[in-house]
Image 1 (cartoon, helix red, strand yellow):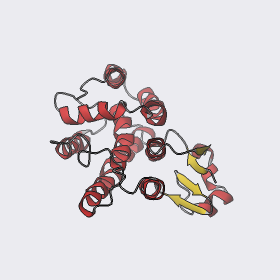
Image 2 (tube, one colour):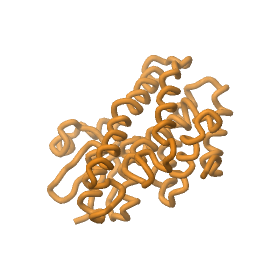
Image 3 (cartoon, helix red, strand yellow):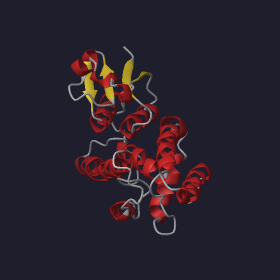
Image 4 (cartoon, helix red, strand yellow):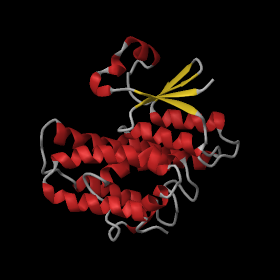
Length: 236
């Protein structure tokens, strides 16, 4: 039975799952859910996912939601026994899990707060100090490592890049001078053959909506951030 992923490409969590599916080279069907039209509140969807969130993965009779849970499930069920995407060794897995919790409890929360200020309260002079603190933490996570949880690509990279790339292309581009490790990591992930289709496309759509709401002085920053990703600036 074919895997079915419900969601929208504008959602970072959905894109994290798309990256995982592509990395595992799994066949799947993508069913678009228009959350602005309330399709996630329809009876059939709520029956499968009582929290009526995206993404939702349907695997036969099993329904799994929350991007972190879905990514782990996919690797555990469909990856190889020694698949580094979600390592089985206790310490390595704990580090991946910590990074996943960091994404959901810190990075993604900051994205939601900024989005709320801009789109709900129409605030354009946004407080970005906390976001810079988060970038500094990610820089430290990457010290001496190629990837966010060590020396191997993992689902933690997918989860964090899905949110970070959106922030990078909209509210606060990652400064390659101030955050060289983070900038190089972002370029490294963007070089994955499936990255553009699975993540960049959706992140760019969100960034365009953000940019339309922000003062025009943000345009040059956004254009540079996009150009840096496309060119692989900072790549190591």
